[in-house]
Amino acid sequence: MRTLCTDLTTTTPGTEVTLEGWVHRRRELSRVTFLVLRDRSGLGQVVLPAGTVVPPEETTVRVTGTATANAQAPGGVEVTDATVEALTEDAATPPAELWRPGLDVSLPTLLDHAPVLWRHPAQRARWELAAASLRGFRTTLDALGFTEVATPKLVESATESGADLFAVDYFGRPAYLAQSPQFYKQQLVGVLERVYEVGPVFRAEPHDTVRHLAEYRSLDVELGFVRDHRDVLAVLREVLAGMVAAVASCETAVARTGARLPVVPEEIPVIHFADALALVGAPPDEHDLAPEHERALGAWALAEHGSDLLAVEGYPMAKRPFYTHAWSRDGAGAPPRPPGSSGWSNSFDLLFRGMELVTGGQRLHRASAYDAAIRARGEDPAAYESYLQAFRHGMPPHGGFAIGLERWVGRLVEAANVREVTLFPRDLHRLTP
Image (tube, rainbow, N blue to C red; front, side, top):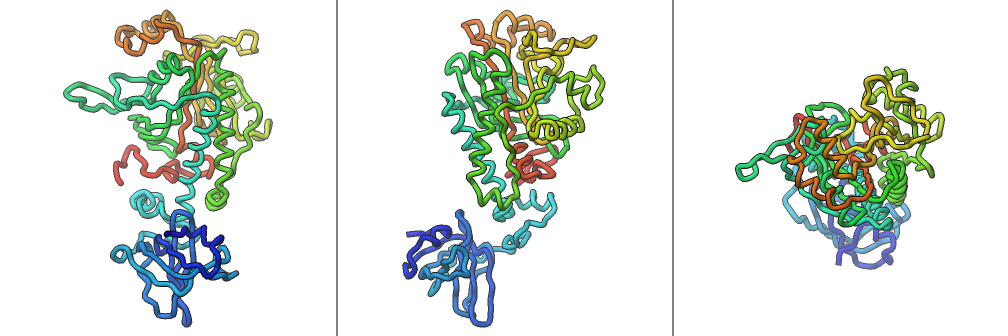
């Protein structure tokens, strides 16, 4: 029976054990040879007679020996009187020494050799934070009565305005890779009321920045019977708290990555878009926040509210997709509509340490409102028939949000580039590995 490296610490000394994993490091001394073995759980030390031939680093091996107490060994237990059996031919020399504490390579090297360099414990720990975040996301929403769904990634038309599409040949017909599950998760509110999905989304925008990917993992949520976008923001707050708690439970991964976990306040601080523009000195007729504005707002939220999180609500309708609900918080102190503006929206962006992490808000839910919104775009509602049918059969007031997983992890570990925390990134230049 196989013993994992971390289980050595609880193994009774004198017990025969079998370890399987990778040769993490070899150290040949005058009297003894050390083999450090790495498996999915961590590292284990094996002591061999001097001169024992040990396969090169990264070769997969099976080690059989005796668990022996040694205060100097990792976890206080090592394996002695051992035999080493290679499970494959000798491994080629990796592009970096994976036994070193840090992975000191350039970003191109990391991306070109991702299948090997993700083995480094500190690099691998970054994805362990992502996996923990997914567990926290799902666990929190399951407890709140949500149902996980799976929606198509091949679609017949655009979902988001302003985002280019990846076109594909679908049996001789034009189709596109989905920019988001937005249309489907709204329709499923009419079936299940509260839904969420974890899946890839595709954006054919020619961005070449440290924060954009052409494919990323989107954590989508949609819920019915909301009063406005603030109800959506309240659910987002619970989700983020659950994700942080799940990440915090991965103490080894947090330590290896140096992740700085945010404190999720009981109520996330909120600022209206117009007030945000004024705060950062931007023109009042701007329709979006520039990255430097987001950074300034993040610094303000930390100084003023002690929070790494800040919600900016009320973005101009001109910036939001056609399904966005107009501002409805009467008496909430919203600034007057600026000249030439199409008005404020019941939507928000959540900034995390000065970078947009989440977009969310309330959607339209009346069929007549969709008819008017689509015609205002100069389009025929008949082109959206498969989407609009749900609204003609009774839909509750609803809203939702989406979190970019890679951007979330990137902000946790304060990576300089989102590609550093993406297993196999796809961007303007990269289709391999």
